[in-house]
Image (cartoon, rainbow, N blue to C red; front, side, top):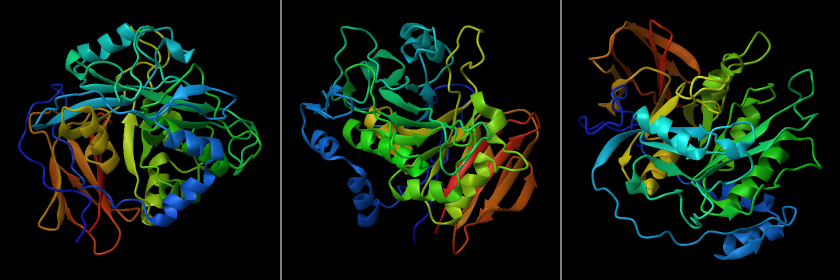
Length: 400
């Protein structure tokens, strides 16, 4: 019997005082052969060859040369699993629309008790300084240095005239994060599909880049300028995408949907109900720090259960062993005796409502800090915890 969550162990070390033990879903089944074949068939010959050669290679993306996957440098991992708070969507000066140096970005997250961040500059895998050479690594500096800083990239494409049609302006956004890529492009990466207007082809080009660069794919703010559909999200899940932002604090207007467009949560449920394996993340999508600008840090995060080791953290993200939050801390979110059990950290103030969502429908609401719901024989159940100030925690779906 397969379950989406397993029991949470007792409180260990936590990165910050506002973070409690997260849900611990078990690893989802590996992508089937058909999914792997579908992704492989999207790859160009040049990209496929580059992905297989552990040395400098030409991708054919406008002649951008970069180093492909190499062996990781030695790292002595921690042996104990702990609760780790992190952001999977962070920008710095190299993005072009942020003015903050890397050092200041790292300092902000360290000062606010994060355990890790993923630096996701637009269309580039940034090194922290010109003397760094972290090719083959999933991190940009020694993990023992403090805050774990993962390599990353936001594959950013802003075309006009996407299909399915989204916003009436015709503008659309194809943005995909890669978390922990091991390759290092030489400057700005040109990866986008510019011949087709089909969104699936544009996202497919991002997955081609993923195959060459490495890393875990995350679909960012899927409803920005609309255009995401359940069918498209299901197909992306079938092609190996595991993460989707259901709460991007920089785009709260688009998260909730409107009279003509579903919310990001409704899209997530529609894909889950069709059997997709997708884990929901929250992020701040930070660009602006020190109290200025319209995209500040700290508006959303994930909390994973893993050893304080970069590869263990990435494994936990890929397997859904985390919960997402923009303010609510959980003590428990696990499956016990065939039930999904959710508990708010008892030391947290405020009043709470626990909503259980089963196969896309809210089936039970509980006022209080503890709730439980039997995992259905077919489909899934997940939970959303809401505090009286409107803050949330999102528990990953559990299945038999």
